[in-house]
Length: 408
Image (cartoon, rainbow, N blue to C red; front, side, top):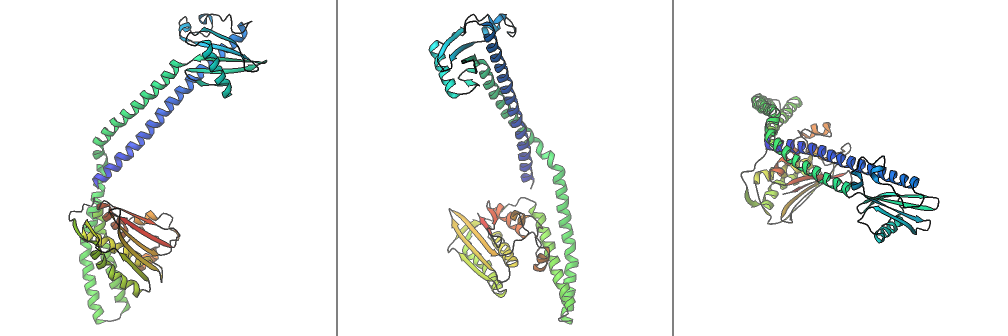
């Protein structure tokens, strides 16, 4: 139980921290991308407007960058690289201004222009450039701003932030691993006290229940057929079974470990359990079918596997409808043992079938009382399957039948 609880605590803590880190890294990078792009667009708009105001001839006479009000100092002339292309209304290049860039020749500028105009976008990133397109008075102006430094910074920030996030996850994982035992101690102590109380109460109740049952049996021999005595015997038997299940329940809180694993004939073990249920089903007017593969062997705890089959068949017998059908299938598939228990029943009011494995969960309280169920049988079945490294599932396709499938 302690190991399972620690695993759940660590998993929950890491999922929560991982989600926070993911959101944080995502927000930081999106914000950086937005602010960087906005800065590039503002610079493009200023260059475009400056070009329109200061040129009598398109693409010539552009003043030094250091003289512009937005330059930010004399170093701006060496940091801001751009070129301007003007086209006519037919997309023919008329002027190319490359005064502030040396890495782009006219042929490259023409190719870039053709590709941008073919896309039909007004703004965007193209290779290492941020561009904008302005259309007015039969003329098209394209401004290409070198954004390689900005793009490299965004990429570097992404790599660094992801790296920090991964390292943080590892550090937090180690801390949670170290501190998890201390964190769950109060809960563990509370569970231990509950288990001790259940065990002690179970032992204390056994003596008076045995005394009541013995007295009722003696009274039944003297007053044969008395309905009140019969009711006492019935309720005493139910209470005895409930006390036994409560003690078993307290043990289920611990992680089940199967020590007595042996290779045995599953076919024979299943027949031993299934045959009595066949007689009970027939006596109750129900159809019982079993298909158990011959010479089927498995390595497990024989008693636990027989208890598992008994729980599933008993559940099917109790909750199948009147005149219903019960079927047991046991076979090997892909080197694993498969057990299926099918029965017809009414599943009205059950929206989540997985809740059937919850302890003390009984969808129909009145019927469960009549059948004598205590509500922990399927929980015990699940614990047995998990202790053998298997999985148990429940499924219903039409709301009128139910199938429990065990794969070990």
